[in-house]
Image (cartoon, rainbow, N blue to C red; front, side, top):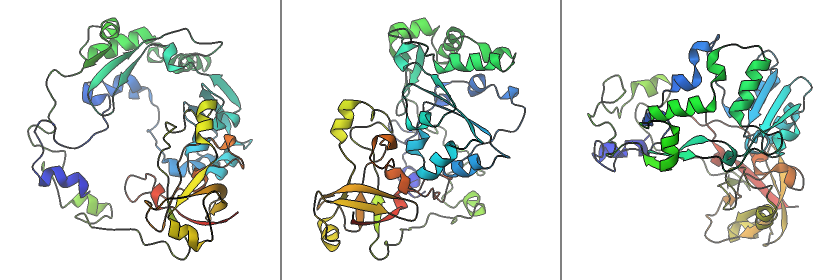
Amino acid sequence: RAVGLLPAVTGNFAKRGAGLLYLNGGARRGIDGDYLEAPHLRQNQRQTVSHMDLVDLLRDHKRARALITWNINIAASNPRQAALRDTLNSDDLFHVAIDLFPTDTVDHAVVILPASAFLEFDDLVMSYFDLTVSAQVAAKEPMGASLPNQEIFRRLAKAMGFEEAELFESDEVILDTLARQLGQPDFTTLRQAGTVQRWKEPVLQFPDLTFATPSGKIEFASDAAEADGYPRVPQPSIDKKPAGQKLRLLSPASRWLMNSSYHNDPKIAAKLGPEHITLHPDDAAARGLQAGAKVKVSNATAAIEMIVDVAPMLPRGVALAAKSRWPKLIPGGLSVNALNPGTKSDMAESSSVHGIEVEVTAA
């Protein structure tokens, strides 16, 4: 909250190149979200669930008896990895997986539908960090029996007996409609241009200095936050230092992976090598460990084996291990995410993964 208020403190709104950093979705470019989602077809209230609660949701057969996953490897990226894997193996859960590769998640599916690669169908691409729009143009036909996700969903809708026209719009119609919402005559025009700026002039954040708050102003002191059980104003806080021999585990992205993609590529796997954990020299010495030693990294959630690296640039009391490996490609079948107990952040029910504590001992 304090960091988010810095542009207000420094007067950096309604100016070019200033403001907050957004992950820009389609709405900020003029995409009609209701056209894409068709909420008028929904018969029940929309429900969402935090990934921190996914295991508990799937185990509750009054709430969930079927699961569809597409283009996501939850068996690698989600918390409580071992518990999730057991849940996906349950005979009481009907799991359909749609994917390009045989991921860990696909291994636990009852039905597997092969997805085509993103270079095998036309689509739109919108950058996270600017307001450009690009045409994704098919470079080849889908291989074998694979299909784009949207065609799979159309066929599922037909097989399930749905008749609503919104569920059967072709890619061509959808892309032309979205292109017009984005200020282009049609998708063909965008395809010929490749990448375009959505707006001719830089977009200013809150140009009239009116904000979506009860007062219409930036609220340093927030009644809404206080009503949700948070401090009325931002407060400095820091996690307590791990007790005893525990270390705080940080798990940033690997330099060789994009989330959980590419680990199945043999060249990438060779560059990754076995899983390593890095310690400060003093922390390694205190545990009688040297670089290259095999260690057990454990907490109440799981235990996995890694190889120790030593680096003085790391703060004392901190251990570092990259995320996103496929568990099936690791000896022991568990990756660093197995150590994540699924504790939620204090706001938005997100992951508090960097608060995980572990013990590191000789294997």
